[in-house]
Length: 207
Image 1: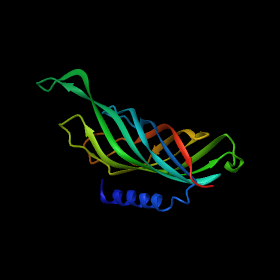
Image 2: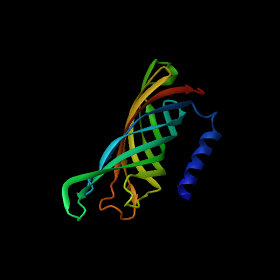
Image 3: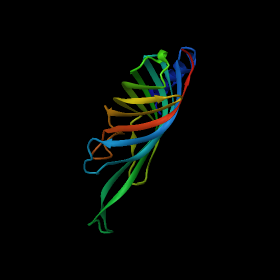
Image 4: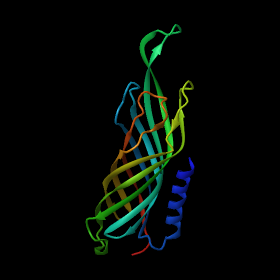
């Protein structure tokens, strides 16, 4: 993680930890994280299933601001033409896997459809905003390539969720504003949109 990414993460941690009494709700959750490659290119990039887990806090009631921190594991596959010992194509592609582990830092603005003060058993909410993906480390099962993952990737997106008692479920979609890699290691440096679904527990801290 580079210097600017560390500063961003530290600022968010300080913001969350210094204002617990202002937060209306703490959520702990995890779930599915999927990758939708915008341009497969010559490498035939394909998104595979990953996962995310973490926490966020909501400030506000009907309207709310919600920063969070999640561990996000992303899996991508790419293919190259197989070659025989003489360097001639074999006609069979060889597939490799790229796995990255990042801190997913969303900052969402949202609105509940029903006023929480009415104490309804069920509520529906919508949300939208930016998300930063701060690289922790990445693995590529091809030792012939030296790959540098972008230290920070940026997204814009939104979604919807459902609250039932102390539980929540939500789904969202983030559109990539930046590419995955630094440099020219691959002919295609993809942008990868993110689809996710998560569920977990929510704890009311203040009203």
